[in-house]
Image (cartoon, rainbow, N blue to C red; front, side, top):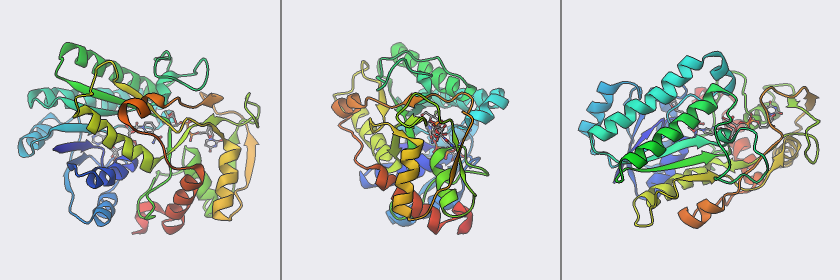
Length: 342
Ligand code: NAD
Ligand code: UFG
């Protein structure tokens, strides 16, 4: 079984390649490298001890995808390719809708042309907007998104649901990731954000390694245990494993269109200060912080009920926040400048 991994050179994609290889899945990576480099693939190749088939290209490039589907017999697609910066999406909505929504439409069109009918899609807890309560269940209302990035994920979910209704032989699994963090235990691959990190974990790691002076904690007056925002952090290696479980499910007789969408989180909420303290414990470095204004668009609490993934996919998160911090720290301290340290 050969899977096409769009966006496979990126943070989550590169970790998923290892999980797929360990599970015996064959794959080809397709990526335009707009937010990644071939170095991540070279390092994955070392970890899995084999060459990786890679085609450089854009998911909006119909001709290139046709060539790829002609060269390789693709049985399923894991679709990571997308732009993901929330703030940037507010400034550049057309670029985000074009890349994420239009790109997915082109990909689905080619899949139909080549009769490839299995897809696992990277969605996000962002589709829930500000939830009425926590933990969040898959049946909660979606679509109350607050930025074009989130709306693009919501739109793609709807497109996939409509496709499944229109063609009973088309199989889709939608994984709604909560907050992916951490890195592979080798310390050779990890998250490598451009410029100033938007997300908490890479920011904390860069403060601990001395690249940045202090962490700005966005808001200390939320209705949470210590006033700081609460999230469901999920180790990227556990998240990678969810994709293998999703492919297994799609290929099994258990696949049922009633269960297409799964929350992928640990099911526990940690505050910003919990993460700071855990990181300080494992790195034995101080992480200075200042509590500043809330960040526009942030919500107080977001964590998952992930029991459906456990029941149907046989997946649950195994790694702890200590593991997340240890592995992030190993990656950051071995590669203070990310992949440009090669
Ligand atoms: P990433 O930016 O590291 O990886 C995405 C990859 O897709 C990159 O390698 C990029 O070069 C590639 N890409 C982007 N547009 C492309 C295009 N038009 N054609 C071909 N390749 C393209 O991001 P990630 O953190 O690995 O995220 C993977 C997926 O998971 C994304 O769809 C993202 O929206 C989703 N997701 C991420 C998070 C998170 O916090 N990291 C949370 C929820 C959902
Ligand atoms: N935070 C800070 N300081 C920082 C960065 C973040 O205090 O420098 C706080 C935020 O206010 C929030 C928490 O840390 O309370 C987590 O923030 P992140 O930016 O790491 O993550 P978000 O929950 O805002 O968003 C992430 C992804 C989105 C995705 C969303 C839901 O970035 O793409 O999770 O899954 F949509």
